[in-house]
Image (cartoon, helix red, strand yellow):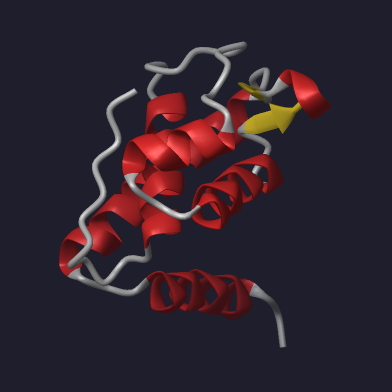
Length: 122
């Protein structure tokens, strides 16, 4: 699996791993049922701390993109409904654009939250 970590980037390494894996899941390069490398092995391959890769996996699991099956490993989760899939692809494009523009993830997320708040009646 080709993941590139830029140690000089403003984006933390766990977010770089999470974002690249999410993109590969989103565009089908990692199809449903694909087993991800074990955390320790993957961390070693990437030259990262085990906790860094573990956090990326937790974030992916929280987003419903992967599922952990105990000692059997972590797998790409089955797809969701079409609306969720389309929204995920839009979110990936948004995250990629934010990174390209140098906007920190916290700021990009704050902008999304503000957009939701602006949509609510007073």
